[in-house]
Image (cartoon, rainbow, N blue to C red):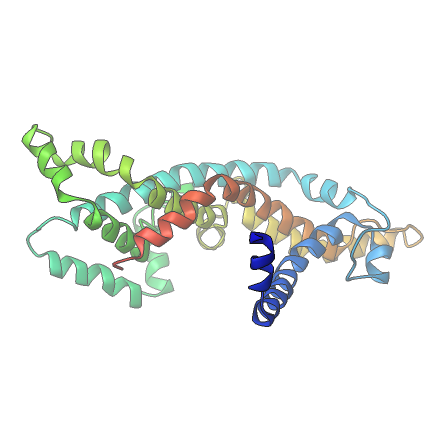
Length: 294
């Protein structure tokens, strides 16, 4: 009976909504699916069917070409280093700043105003470049870690979350003799895991995609991050493959420029996509709770 009643409640409006949601889902998912297929097929298959539903022939030559570049492994190590230390650095500054601004500090409104001011204005690219040189970070991995202390919007949402926690927890802890650091690390943070996981993931994505500061400040090839190396591979792919084809015009090319681009995209996206399933429950809950008062 319940199943019959639920079917009766399934109206024409529900069918229309379901149709459009399915259509939008296909529109969103297919480009990723097609990118994977393009990275797995040889050139002659791609030329015949650039938009394919399934591959008629599969080859891993494109991925061998991408990973065959020795600089890519070194770039991966640099990016992992940036990600680990950068996320710890970002989250530490974000949490400490957010927690401090929940307290009745002298000049708190002025401090908040100065922080929010940076959301709308910055010093410009040339002063930024000169500053990095003056503090001795030029051509150092630290130039891709230290300049971005925290994202103001993330800090404001975490601050709002901290303010929503019951004040009685802190008051009872202070009666027992706990100081602010003890309260933060032993009481506040364990209760804030959803929102901390959410913004840790945000910072992970930002650090994984780091290439701008690397392009500006890194001159040594051994210190370049993964994204910058992949960018170079993609830019050079057409010239490299054209020269190889000119030397051996009779061969059937399995590695081609668009395939290299798509393989580079997959290599870039895969580690981050693997994190999402494990953090999804924290991700949704953290965004919902943290944005209530922001």
